[in-house]
Image 1 (tube, rainbow, N blue to C red):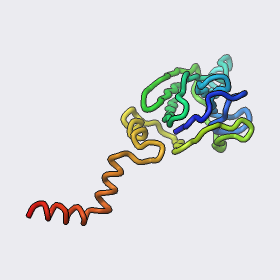
Image 2 (spheres, rainbow, N blue to C red; image 1 turned 90 degrees about the horizontal axis):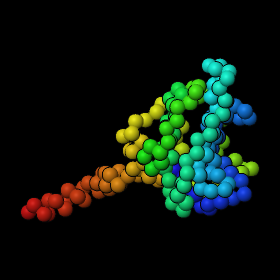
Image 3 (cartoon, rainbow, N blue to C red; image 1 turned 90 degrees about the vertical axis):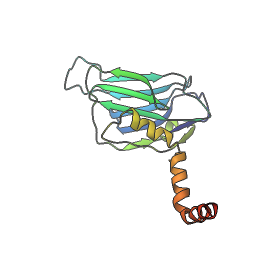
Image 4 (cartoon, rainbow, N blue to C red; image 1 turned 60 degrees about the vertical axis):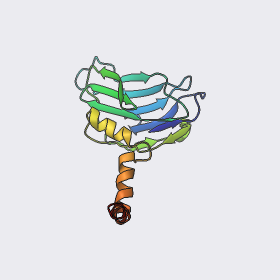
Length: 169
């Protein structure tokens, strides 16, 4: 989840990178010239040495001053980007994505993201559309209205029981 505070800065705003130096995968930024989301991926050169090692995926017009859900599915050489549970970009790369065991860096000091980040999930499996929508429905704070009602009912079950007993008399 991203909340972009300010539309433009002098340079790209770093959100997240996994890995270090030349071995990163992926790197996510907000453009410094517009409100486009920029995702850089690094491909594995062992499959084809003629393939460009880097590819940039750009998602135009990320809303500002509101929460936006970003989900990125990567499977072999396929990259699917979802914004607010809708598929907005699907890329087939010439080579599979290069895996790395580097750390995840969030909001790098040099080019800080001017906004808020919530609920980062990084996993070794991808979700289907229904799973992505379920995550989206929970919102940036991790609760859906269904979760809230279940919690309220569980916490106040004796009170609800008494209330229904009174109504049935």
